[in-house]
Each structure stands twice: as structure tokens, then as C-alpha cells.
Length: 379
Length: 250
Image: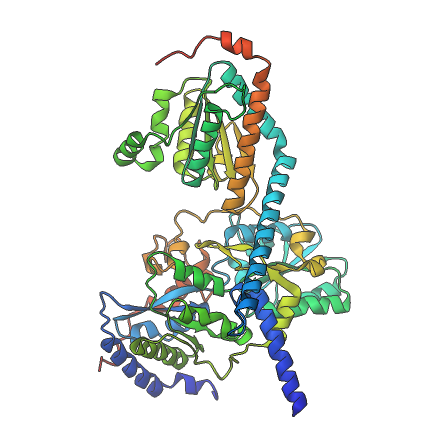
């Protein structure tokens, strides 16, 4: 397939892997003390497992899976809030498909639908707006979820709802920004990450400027990366080359899509509709300052948190679930007590097993098979 | 061509302004060499953050006292009744909440208002030998509970402070106190956690906030008010208290 096959070319991958192996060896990393590169985005995590990249890189190099899966970092209490809204009379609750199975403390949205709540899957917030337009007697709520990547479409839907005067539409805002969370990881005691693969889709909206502090203030390389296997391998090599040179910078491997200045129209829509929350809670990581947005007062009528009574309770994760430890990189998914037994994609206990971008789901789907035999040796 | 350049410049300006709104660490920066403007922007950002925090702090306290003021009054009666009968207050918490537990105990033992009597209160985290002994030999969850049998008498009050309500050692302390016939109070936050659900906790004062800082700020306000109310309740029976039998010694 044009524009896809080129980025999955085995020959190109082999050449990159050879260079990666050489750079890793020159940097003196060993399997006991590997270089740790965090892929921030859940899309990268998915690709790393789907294409077995973790088995192809040298054992002295390790991918650490970052918190960039918005479904995975959603605290249980917010899912409970969704269900509380969905159960209110006259409400049609709309959501992206992967959020339907995220467990709250009293079940998931899927279970709420089975119990009689009107929960519908949509592919876009505009679909939710059309449902609102077609059902003026119902209150249609959209479960707004995701990073900077999905914020513009939600914001533009609110602007469209205002333009069309659709008053029975609102959103339950759970949009978050990834940048403060990377800073929180960098500030964590015992932080061992040597470099970052930056989130390509977020950077399409934000540009590269928000990430510059990572190199400037923390001295860690960050390469904005695409999502195909050779994108990830090339980005990894760029990080290693920075480590070899001793000079940290923000580089853009995904230049075919990411404008360093970001997307002005998308950013404008975001800031017209949303403002920063003082803090937002992340599953497994706790409250992080300025890491979430809420609907501005100007658009309060479209804010489900203002229109509906939501419990807003904080719910602890099940004790057996170790999503928090996996998110912080303290353990790998198979080391979790319930991985693959009590917790599977069919019956997830933790959110990391729900989304295909979650580290546990990716491990479950792609990494339980026999390891791939490395195709290159260190130069 | 000029129009295209103008459009690009406008878009870049829009993006720059938007990025500052979304990422405060960028808003605090300005063009190189413009230190004075940068300092002013930083000051403005700090001032905005400060105003947002104190407004939130005030709002959380207001919400608590408007919705749960009755519980504070009940707690004051409970404490006053205990002190009146020769009871003691025992307090416990971890970290910042341990500081609050110490603070509330010292408020009662060392009243800052002239003419108010000292009331017997004891912070259970102050005995380091006991804490380390139990922590080492039995486990940290038992550090308060193991002190209860030697100290508590029926009718005393145990007060546990925990922002999440899930501190295992505080909950165990409250359970042990309840089993010994003491009255039990808790200051918690969030959804109140296991403490709010425990049948061993007689009165749970829960601050409805997710922020540990806002919860602790409200806890301080609660126990300052509580201290004042208890003294008001006891003010009328000072002569009776003076004549009341002293607490039995161990």
C-alpha cells in the first residue's frame, strides 16, 4: 500500500537495527543496565508490540511504556461519573468505543447499557451532535476524552453546536495534556529514562515548542516520532545519536506530518472552548498540576459537569490491579499479579488492558507468543 | 504573496498565544533578551495561580461548613461530653495529617486564649520508641492500634486524620479505640475511603475535594472551630469540672 509499505520495509528496518545495535554498544549499555527510552504515546506502544520491535532491538536497550493512552490513565471515579450521567432520565450518553469497556467501581458503560442506560458508540463528537439535533427532546452528552489530539474536534463541535443553536448537547470533559505528565515523570525520584520518543499526533496540534524544556532543562533527548515501524526505529536511532553526541535536543522525525509551529486553527479552537484545570487526576500517577482542561465559562451551557449532578468521587483501583506500577514503569505487564488470568481484554480489571494502546493489552495480544529471534547483532 | 505571509504571521501569533494558554511553562517565557517582560509575565502567572488556589481553598471550606456544619457541632458535643466526664483525646495521622494530629492535640493542651483550661489531649505519633517497636515487630498498620489498650479508657475520644480515609494505621487505631469503648472521630477527604465506610467510626467529617492541600487546609479550619466550640460548651460548667473526680491513674 502506497505510503504505508515504505514505512514497513524490512530492508530499511534491518539497516536501522544494525545502526541502533552499534550505537547501543558504543554507549556502553548492557542488558543488566540497559538504556531506557520511553515511548510517551500509546500508539507507539501498540506499534512496538505489533511489529515485535521490543524483540528486535538489542537487549541492552529497553522501551519503557509511557502514560500516553488517555483511556488507560482515566481514574475509576470519572467512569463512575459517566455512568451516573448516563443513568439520568432522558440522557443519551455517547462515547468512543474503547471507553465503553473501561471498568469503573460499579461496572463499565457497556454494563450500564446492558442495564438499560442509553449509551451509544460514536466515531466523532460531530456524530453526537447529530444525535442531539435529531432528538431535541433528549439530553445528549459526549464523553470527551483524549490528549491534544482529540481536543480540537471536541472544541470545534462545541463551536458548531453554538453556531447551530443546539442546546441539548453537552460534553463531559476529560481531556488531558501530556506535557505536564512528562515533566512529572522527569521530576520523579529515581527517574532513569535516558530519552524520549515524543508523541507524533499530539505534536501535530501543539508543535514542538511545548517539549523543548525536556532537552533544555532536563538534558534528555526527545524525538517526535511517527507510528510505523521504521518511524519508531529511526526515532530511536536519532535519540541514541543525541546520547552519543552528549547534546540533547528536540528533533522531529515525523516531519511529513508535524509542523514545528503546530496547527494554529486547532490550537485556537482549543483555547476558545477550554481552559486549564488547576490539576487533574491520572490513574496510577495521582493529581498532576495543569494536566487537564475544562470547558470555559463562556460555553458553560455545553458543560455536562455543570448541567448534571456528578458524584465526583475518588475511587481507588482494585488492590489486585497494578496498572499504576505499570504506568510508572516500575513493573512490566506480565509481572502484574492478575495479568492474563483475572485480567484479560475480555474481562479487564485495569484500564491498561482495555484500550489497544494500553501496555497490558498490547502485551497480551502481541507479546505472549515466542520471542522473535533478533535479526542483527551488535556491530 | 504578502497576503500569504500575513496569514502565516497571524496563524503563528494565534498559535503562540494558544500555546501559552495550554502550557503555562511556555506562557512564562518571552522573546530572548526581553527579561523585564518575562519577569512581569511570570509575576502575572504566579498571581493568577495564587488567586485560583485561594479561591478554591475558600470555596472548599465554605462548601464543607455549609453542608456539614451540623457534624462539626455534633463532634464538639461529643468531645465536650468526654472532657466533662474526665475523658482524654488521642489523635493520630500520617505525614501532614500527623502534623495536624499534633496540632489539634496541642491546641487542647495549651490553649492560646487566656482563661480557657488546658484539656487532656495526646498525639499518638510522638512516642518514637513505641512507633518503631511496633512498626518493626508487628507492622506499620498497627502503630496506633497497639497503643490503645495501654492508654484508652471507655469514654475517651480517638481522632484519626487521613486525607484519603484509607490510611490503614489510622483506621486500625480507630477500630481498636472503638473496641475499647472509646468514642471515635475522623477527619478525612475525597470520598472518605475505608474510614468513612467503617462502622467503628462514630462521626466522620469528610471534606469533599480531591486536592490534598485543600483538604488539609479545611481540616485545620475544622479543628480550630471544633476547639473553640468545645471550650464554649465547657465554659458554663467550669466549677463542676473543677469538682469532678480526677481521671483514674493507670
